[in-house]
Image (cartoon, rainbow, N blue to C red; front, side, top):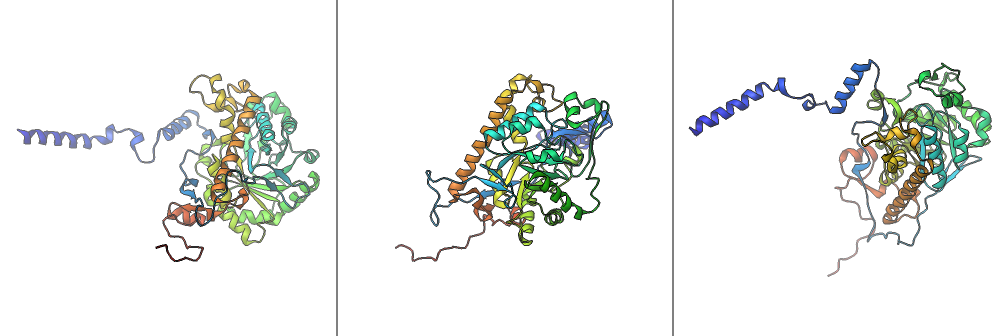
Amino acid sequence: MLEGLIKQAVDEVFDRLSKMQSVKQLFMVDGFSLLRMGAIGERARTGQPLSEPYGSTRRFLDFNELMFLPVQLSRFPLDNHQSVKTAVTIGKRAERPLRLATPIMITGMAFGSALSKKAKIALAKASTLANTATNSGESGFMPEEREAAANYIVQWNRGRWSNRKEDLPKVDAVEIQVGQGAEGSLGNRVKAENIREDFRTHLGLQPGQDAVRPARFRHIDDPSQFKAMVDELREASGGAPIGLKFAASRIEEDCEVAIQAGVDFITIDGAQGGSGGGREVTINNTGVPLVYAIPRAHRYLQERGVRDQIDLLVTGGLRDAGDFLKAMALGADAVYIGESALLAMVFHQLEKMPPGTNPAQLFLYTGEYRDELDVDAGAQAVANFIKASTTEMQLLAQTLGKDDLQQVNSDDMAALSREIAEITGVQLAYVPQEVRTPPVPAFR
């Protein structure tokens, strides 16, 4: 009887397995997820490419497989009373170098095509409170933002949105934007029906006119012409640092163009970089993650003999102090934050919205609750995040025995996998290190 029951159970299992094709859910299929299913449904509903805030939903290789190596016996850590320098200078050769108290800056996020005016002013105020810099984003110079920011970097953008040479003496650095991590080099068009009066006035548009950003600078027909642009902006700004920002892609080729152009700094935006409303297809399928890009850019600048002349700024998917200092250890001079700053800004204001509402509704230009944002409270929250993160970077440097964040390098880390070691040049954690001091007879 038992044998019969077992046979019946086995037969039922095989019968269910044979029918699995008709009963299993799509999310059980390899490569599918609820997010991907939702994206398919949204495209089916609208017939349009999908846009989304924030960065990629893919899980890229990142800084989590790198660990710092505290010093203890062979070398000594810093004591609690010993300070760690955090200052950084962008554009050391420029007539007006940009000097900051921390290497953590607020990245370019545009008014209108991404953020509300209140959000932009809050970020500018935060940069002043934290003694760092904020970036205009592709919407260009905004007087209210300039007034609120002690250190203001303006993007010279492909749409020439609010780009006027007469404003350049008022800025602290100019970043020529030719691409970004979330969109690569795609152009952009903001429909007139999505442009309110404040954004229309800012861009100098007529009613009913779309805001258009082409894929490239229309007057640049050859990479060699970027040098003339850099020289022109340097003169117009009165010697402010001039840089080129591009998506992490053909890194060595793009760095070479920047070198030939005579820039003071390079900004690389990794594949994890977000956007106020980037296309999902480019967010998830273009570019190179920062952990791959930083060592390549750093090595190339070294090989070309210009590493001490050109500063390397990085952005795209950096979340906390560990990420920030690991990026610097791999070769970056300073880092930009975006998503972390936005979340810090609104985290303690989420009760202003119904439970479960996306936090972006508080800071996006199109956000339903954008008018509810408390500018001063948000500014203080972002400044607190930057200050706390800077202190955490100092704590890491202390345990590494370094009294300056700029001294931390790849020798201060270990890689947890062969892949990350090969990518970054960082030593493998499971490979014995060479003893740097001569061995002495063991105690008996």
